[in-house]
Amino acid sequence: MTTFGALDTTIVVVYLALSVGVGLIANRFITGLSGYLVAGRSLGTALSIATMTGSELGLITVMYQAQKGFTGGFAALHIGLIAGIVTLAVGLTGFIVVGLRRSEVMTIPEYYERRFDKETRVLGGILLALGGILNMGLFLQVGSQFVVGVTGIDGNLLSAVMVGLLLLVLFYTVMGGMVSVVLTDYVQFVVLSLGLIALVLVTINTLGFDHIVEVMRTTRGEESFDPTAEFGGSYIAWMGVMGLVSCAVWPTAVTRALASKNVSVVKRQFSFSAISFMIRFLLPCFLGIAAFVFISDAGGLILSDTSGITGFQLEGGEAQSSIMALPTFFRQVLPVGVLGLLTAAMLAAFMSTHDSYLLCWSSVIARDIIAPLIPSQSSPEKQLKWTRVFIVLIGIYVLFWGLFYHPSQDVWEYLGITGAVYFTGAIVVLSAGLYWPKASSMGARLSLYAGLSAIVGLGPVKRALGLDAYTAPQIGLCTLAFAIFVMVVGSLAFPDPPSLSEELTATDPESL
Amino acid sequence: MSFETWVQFWKVTLYGGLGLFAALSIWVIFAGVGDIRDMFDALRAERDKGGKD
Image: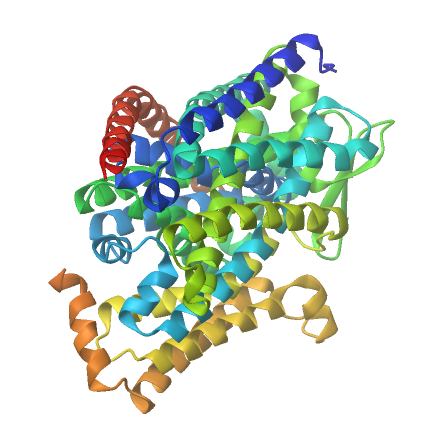
């Protein structure tokens, strides 16, 4: 087994110091809110792809997809394939993202006000912030679990690792805003893309593709290769929704469209990013499968209960959760130096997601909740100040949530359902707002409220309501159908007055 | 689909995706440097303009 040594530690420390330096450099170029939130709308295609991949291919993604591969086998690879296909369709058609970019808004709730009214903007902002902040609640915990798992340090130090990582991200995000995020995302893209490709090649070379297939077939059965048998139709349909949401509705991805130079860049960015959106699920998922095979080969025990595979236990070791399979696998097979590079790459992934999410949710709170409700706080300087304040406050929340909340389901399921609090309503409001002239403010607000019901899919809430028989994807799909229903009924029953209809013409994507 | 077909399907998906991603990464790494330079030029121009105002 490899020990995380001095060389590995040096590589990681140098990388982290560089990230801090980037924050300091970027701060010199920030002169206003546009520069801070959307980098002055100056991103070219390559940099847009790098930053979108950097923020969406986070350590949390690597960890939860590896967990999905560990528990779901080859069948789980369908998640990446669907995500790639859907993102390509969005890139080719410009569905939602082109309309948003043309509207020249900086946040999604800002669009709600242009298309509907201020009340819808504030409500959309609150739900977006609620869903988004809940969603990132586990990021720090999972990232720190990776560090503990890969370095082999005492598990009791998990809290200290969480605090250290958080302080670092807070520093350079508060200092440099989107410019800082874009620069670190680029560096992280370089480290992470090359690292991930190398890791998969090393894994295939070490274990052998045919051996991986054979072990999975004998231990998990042939159905673990067939998504329809392993996951079922409702799960696959939910992955289609998640794929669309991830690229066209999720604010951290949409922000990249809003920061792009023009509509052509947006379409190219999303078309090419289809590869990244597929890979960010596909490769970690495959590494999770490889971790399963490695643990099986090593004579480890695969732990399971009625809900499926829950963890593993290596000979002479303690029982571990399935989320720890990937870091354990890395620590067992990678040599000194490579382990340090890998950890730096994963920390890069960790930070690139955190900085984007912190900036995104805090800017929504400052710009779409505080500014419309308290006019004295709506100047660009005040918004900038509130954005920085909320970056720190959300960071503190993430720390405490990570310390005290322990998910009872796969992390991917947790992320899907917390995100659904926002996106099941938002996907309907954005689609209807952009493409259905009869969509009204009442329909939009009802739809956003309907999305809130997705919280029923969270493990503890589901148990409390006696809905254990239903899966999170089934609840998510029902919430989406409910949001569409109330949008249609609300819009037809309570149409907007003529003045708002005139405004609609001004925000119609075809007229912009 | 049969088991063998699924294995081939995932193999092609994995290797194909890996190849596409490698090509994309190389392009983004090189073209991204130019984009960073352009971004700083734009931000510098905005900063100078703000200073004059």
